[in-house]
Image (cartoon, rainbow, N blue to C red; front, side, top):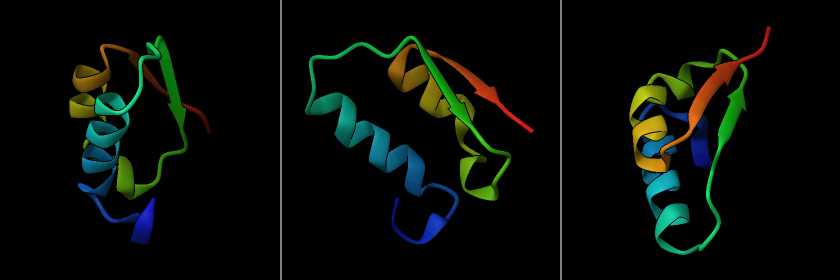
Length: 53
């Protein structure tokens, strides 16, 4: 994702969901600040969002 800014991940996942036929079941990320919108990403993708430490 460009620049690792909060909010960029939401825009990126909207583009991915709109351009693919694949379903997301789970998403896993580190605890970086760029994923502050993880709840919105989970809603957009209809997937469970997990963090690893």
